[in-house]
Image 1 (cartoon, chains in turn red, yellow):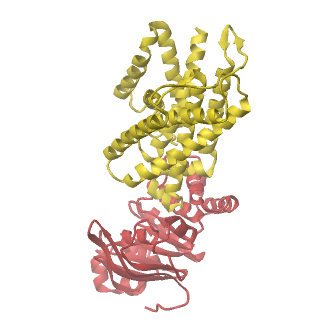
Image 2 (image 1 turned 60 degrees about the vertical axis):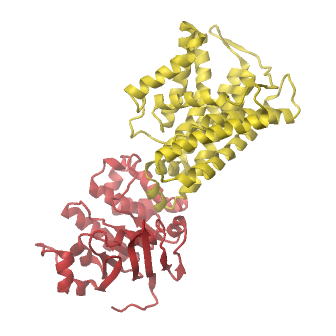
Image 3 (image 1 turned 90 degrees about the vertical axis):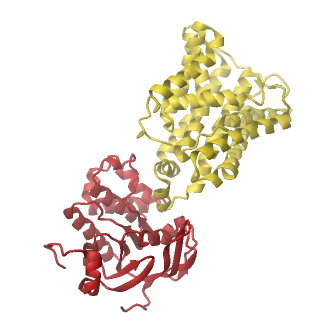
Length: 249
Length: 297
């Protein structure tokens, strides 16, 4: 648990968020370093999604701070947060269903100069050729996995330094889960930091550098992904029965 | 018969202009803006007041002055629409549809009786008459004013089409119509785009109001009420929220009225319109082109 380093990019301190009097996040703290994948583990309703929404400015925390590259962005406008390089891929993908794949990618570059956006879209097509094949197709007609790839590709066009990924493997076939996780791993290779919320904790810990367990809105356990995979209590609570896996990292 | 069709197309292009703003606002924030017709009325009055202020009494007016007045009118009604959204609708975003609807009806009354206080209850006579030559095509009389007004209306529709389909702003509008939260995650400033939508929609209504005032010559503070309902009808025919359908719906409604009244008599005009509205609402509420997946703006 080596934390304090100069390359700390995201630092959440004492975050509290309430909906209608219920505190979904109750004093949560965590940090993400540059080029690191941190995964948030925890039961449904533990406050993982709310934490991501607070970082991207879609919900307003009642207390605590979110610092990005040393700057307090707790009350920044969502647009400015995207412009600063934090891009959120929401739960359920949320692609613009009646718009084409290409237009969805263009929307990812809403704040980006036209030329830069075009270059990045070309890069996404190179990385994800299935999207290029379906570029004129309405996004809603893609399979769930393809929609997830599109949602990630769309975020890439914004030029993220930190990706917030909410349940990217939800509802996907195992092969597609591997593909999505592979893309995330590859983005880290390009220097992108990732905050990853996953129900599929085993798949997440396999690619993550570290993990944070959230219970009732606070971080209860954190550590390197390897330590967490080895931690009896964590395995029992969040990884369930060991799944036969052909790909042990 | 050709004359009847031409008149229908002419009236229909007004309906289409008003209906477009109606449909845009509905498409983007799912609000039936009942005050939309009243922005048309305000446009007629703003045009009237500025022409009077410019010292235009009666008689001929040059096209440049008319275009200038048109632009000024669109600016004023556009800003009024933005203010309306800011003050009346935005605070209610996220609350029930019914409270929004009631607020919209209230906003409609506020505009109608606000204008009544300022301009009085008596109809005003527009100080403009066009002096443009008429054309004869295939035995149909196309008056110069009709041609000029249809030209304006078409130019505005083409401009709107280009904005919505080709620009980044238009793409953002379509995205918000589909999913406002996901749009915010793209870095789209949702409130700003909603304001722009209100501006454009209200400016189009104001333009139509001014043109109607200049064409028919008489305006009053309640003139927006019926046109608002007709615009709603046109939007329903085309599939509400679908801009191309709405344009076509407006023209179609104009044709139905024109052909219907030439057969049955003028007193049947509104009966026909609202008959069509009821027919569509009960048989095909998504409109002719409005499978809920169609392009929205």
